Length: 246
Image (cartoon, rainbow, N blue to C red):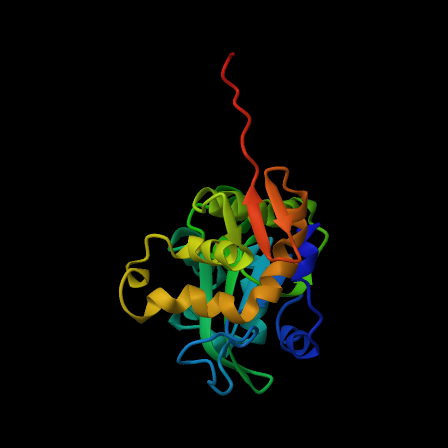
């Protein structure tokens, strides 16, 4: 399964995870603190670590986390876990973030999303917020045996390949494909049209082509519509047969 290429067993990440309630269906780290990026911030020392925690029951999870990590929350902690979960589920992309937290000597930001909301985004691309992050290389810190979630993670990657191929010519490089995939979640973002943010996708992809290849290699090799020339790092879309009657 393609999602297996996402997995990692970083000891430091697991130490951080130990500070939180264990009831997670998925936990992953992403961003420049995990995978090096090019650009003006390439040599930033100790960048903030970004994490996402996926939970089956947000109210129960926030209840436990408030007991363990009361100081992580904003004033909403005074309103209790049900209000926090309501804000999480009903506003924005269905994620509740606690930013600028010192944990195990590391500055982190973590988001909490329900398993159902994540699966829906992976399958239907409702907002491509977390699904878009999972189309790029991330480090899986923890994942349970939820078969529906695992299938949705895999489907998200396959959908990204299919969509990106539609926007490319019949022959293109791996890097061309990965740039298109990495840019999917930024589509419609005004910052990506002008200014420095336009180079963000290239800065993500160029130093991490090998990680993208590990993530998508099996999908590309198994895709019946694609000829994947791994040694040359190039791909070709197979010509569609003319289905019109003779």
